[in-house]
Image (cartoon, rainbow, N blue to C red):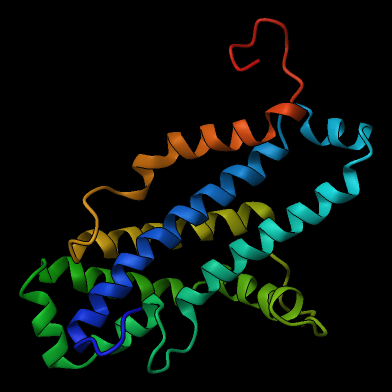
Length: 205
């Protein structure tokens, strides 16, 4: 993030970067889902690459978890994540300055959406996974179940949607992140194509 920005410009800079995070979140989900289709894992194991593939999968998961969770990290001055933007927007003067360039109702909707996701049960599970297995290593709390891949992906997509909406609301993006899902899916399939087992006649072969 550039130095010496006004508080309002700092919010806009964070919003622009947030869209890039949303794009990475969607791409990582597509990569992880594509690895579990079309016999990719079987092909990797048969070629003796199963252990390396597991390491790669764990790296993708770790990146996904860190991207998602930094959106809810406790903000500090100089941070470039969306939580810092919403902290700045708690100051009425900064909020008013930002509302001059965007729809005030949509901006407040983003703030409310962030607050709701920050207290969601899925966030509690993903944060616990991040704290005990990804960013740090520690004894897990037996009362907090680990998120399934389905729950992780669902919460990650909700977070990406928030990041995308914030970028659009502040006029840092003109399209939602979902508009790029087709390209993300094709890129993930191309990544795993050498290991894919497809039926005869499949157009992706």
